[in-house]
Image (cartoon, helix red, strand yellow):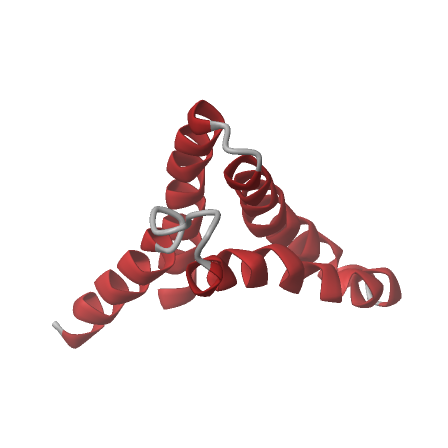
Length: 102
């Protein structure tokens, strides 16, 4: 029961950060910015160790691309793009949260 509760908390926290994002609130945009920038740190490691290349590519596709486009649409105030990318990041963040919870 504790593991199920932990999985639910991880999924809810990772998926809800995108829906709280607004252009004027910098504290709410911090999780999205971290999910965008953090996988870029692992690119040199991926080229040095070819075993981690697939993991780094998956991190870039799950975190950097959708969250980067989400932040761009929020800043440019594109409501339709923001709505679409919030739904996409909810799915990708929820999926990665489930994968991290094991």
